Amino acid sequence: MRIAITGASGLLGRHLIPRLVAKGHEIVASKHSRDIQTDQPIEELPFDLNDDDSIIHFVEKSDADLLIHSAAFSDVDGCDREPQKAERMNAVASGAAMDEARKTNMRLVYISTDYVFDGADGPYDETSQPNPINEYGRTKLKGEVAALRGGAQALVVRAAGFLGPGLPGKPTFAERTAQKILHEAPVKVAIDQKSNITPIEFLSEGIVELIEDGAIGIRHVAPNEIISRYEFASMLARLLGAPHDAVQGVPYAELNREAQRPLKGGLITQFPLDTQCPPLEKALEAFKDRYLSADKT
Ligand SMILES: NC(=O)c1ccc[n+]([C@@H]2O[C@H](COP(=O)([O-])OP(=O)(O)OC[C@H]3O[C@@H](n4cnc5c(N)ncnc54)[C@H](OP(=O)(O)O)[C@@H]3O)[C@@H](O)[C@H]2O)c1
Image: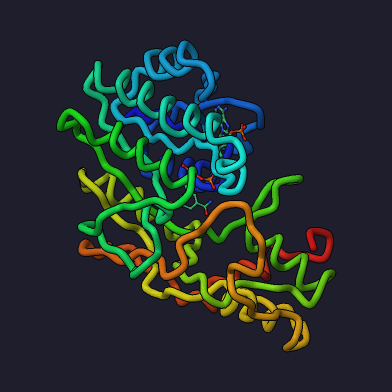
């Protein structure tokens, strides 16, 4: 297939592209502010979530069979701070991309989040009722609706808490936590915020499996383990050889974050994949060995 992908330079995009190329697919990647760091043979087209003409141009010129829409304003606190920007980039832009893709019968894959749920009584499966409690979740849910409207051949993939390597100047959650453990301990981490932590390799392979199977509708792609941020940070501290009191568990409310987050959250699925996720501790150990070298922490 010829596959157009937005958010190609992002954490997920960078991991999806080589896996799709390895399966023989042609890739047309969106180009925004960063270089797409890949040695894969891909085509690039400009794409800006803030500009409908650019969105339409990208989808039209890609001449693709399938569109993976992964680009987003993914800063959860930033979305609460700038709700209009979140609405534009996550809701309006998704509508424009999906509507344009539908005109030429492209298959659609929209990447969404566990933050569409309120976290009152998770974990949640594909039949659970979304009820977002922050602007990020609200605007991403509008993107889901845009993908699924009109009975399109659309797949919505919900995922949670990516574990993977960041870029210079844009560390990921795990990298930021490691930096704090090593240099700013004791680190306060929420003891009551629970969800899945998803190795990006597993998520990318799971999405490729769903695409190749022709899956449509809503699918949750997440490992079985659901843990608190405190348990995650403690596991990371152990692997980094930090003292046991380097991580301090506190209620989420004490962290004074700008946006509310689902507390009893996390994703489960009614549609298990063939792709298997390693236990989190193993995945985290591999992540630490590969990416948390001295110069990065
Ligand atoms: N990260 C998580 O833990 C997580 C969890 C659940 C779901 N998700 C969802 O998964 C998807 C991918 O997340 P990610 O972590 O891979 O994202 P990311 O690393 O933050 O990358 C965001 C991507 O969006 C692009 N982008 C940002 N602003 C843009 C604009 N104005 N116009 C065009 N492109 C723009 C960025 O391009 P440039 O870098 O070139 O500007 C980048 O490629 C998102 O839809 C997110 O909502 C993420």
